Image 1: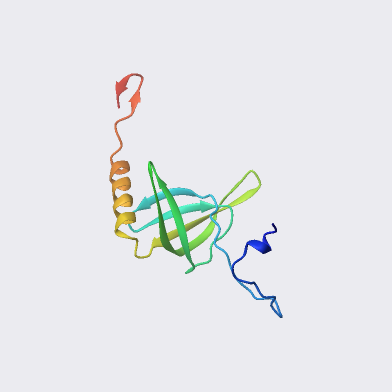
Image 2: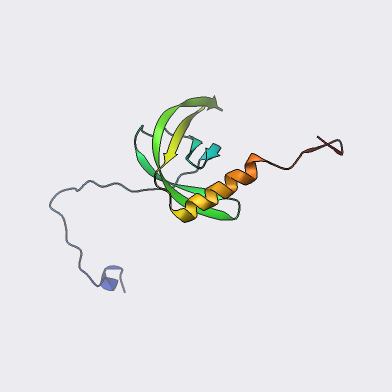
Length: 121
């Protein structure tokens, strides 16, 4: 049985090309975070004032939040590849996402003391 035979609704050919967009999750590095936003580093620039969905892996929890790009600039050149830094403001995060972000930030705001040469630093 072909893929076409499995369809319950017929697709119609279009007389011309129709433009569209797709959201694709790309890897990024989160440089810093607050409950209001993040600074991220990516291999491509984000347009100022554009809106995107950001998936944040916060230890055992993962949340998706909508964010507005406040700025984007060239961060550094690493191994011949340009890295871009963007500041992102969260836009109306869900109560679940906001709670997870707040908890993550609180835990990382006061990390446990480091051990150096087997003594408390």
